[in-house]
Amino acid sequence: MRARLPLDARRGMGHLAPMQVNTLILGAGAAGLMCAAHTGPGTLVIDHAKAPGEKIRISGGGRCNFTNMHTDAQAFLGENPHFPKSALARYTQWDFIDLVDRHRIAWHEKTLGQLFCDDSAKQIIRMLLDEAAGADLWLQTSLVDLAHDGSQFTATLDRQGRRHSVSAAHLVVATGGKSIPKMGATGLAYDIARQFGHRVTETRPALVPFTFSDKPFAAMSGTACPVRAQAGGAAFDEAALFTHRGLSGPAILQVSSYWREGDELSLNLDPGGTLLDALRAGRATAGRRNLTNALGQHIPAKLVDHLAPALGLSGNLADQSDARLAQIVGALSDWRLKPTATEGYRTAEVTLGGVATERLNSSTMASRDVPGLYFIGEAVDVTGWLGGYNFQWAWSSAVAAGRAIATG
Image (cartoon, rainbow, N blue to C red; front, side, top):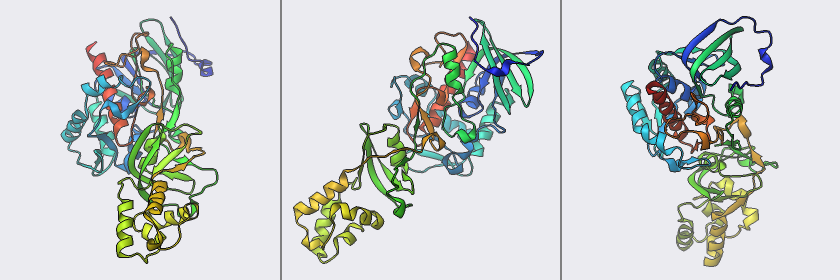
């Protein structure tokens, strides 16, 4: 079998001196670098960027939310919800935390098990480079052509304008998904998967803000509050942020992975379920207080002002019956919205979907059809929640592949 990528750049290559490696890793991001730390001698990592680990560098506000203490397979989406279990169990969040500790990188838990560097995300990049010091790293290098003869992969690479031919017994695809194209993200992993007969599931932007065509929240842009956001059968209790273009914040990003165009989004502005009792208590002690002012003690005032016309908010607390207060709280507990779209891959933290897992070995990430071919990280149809889960998938899937190569 000799499969080729349909790339016009093959023309005019001239004579290429072959270079033999054991493992060629496409992508010097989180998964690629982590894999290179485990594959053993004869590993070459390539990336088209000028620096390795660029998405690591910008993640977590520059401090890298590198894992989550509560990581398990339930926090991941994909056609086969059982697929990530093996890799996650073989290399856990505690294993990565131990690695971080061994490199003396100080860290802290922010919320909900999310772990960040105290100092800088660059420390994680440096740690990965140190761990993968035995591998060669070629930056500003692009894949021009790729073929497989049944036992070896042959790749034509363009390294800063110069062509190189590389033969490898193992090929690891760690090029990620389509999220944040300004950083060079492409669908290369999906092209390679299809080239070698692997199916690619539907891909969509995930962990991404919502937009509304009429920009209804522009006047209260920057307002945030705790909510329970629900869509597609999933619910998340975190903060929502109202923006000039629509909705963002952790709860919104989480639920965006479950939302589909045309679906409604429900926001519960009383996630703790205490608002009705608080309003009743306020009516008993300060009945002359204006209803909107009373609500403003529990929900941001700008949001109350926005909702007041639709809910008919008027009068004082003393004027409201139990039934009326329950009606208001009920509306606030199930505020239905229909987003127009999302911000798309431009701001999406990850890509939902990817290389289908049906023909991948869950213990090694190896193709069941093409000897020596591996897909890891975001390229695979495994997508985690917000909060360090996707980095942990990168570490776990990379180690699974790297160890399989080293011991195979």
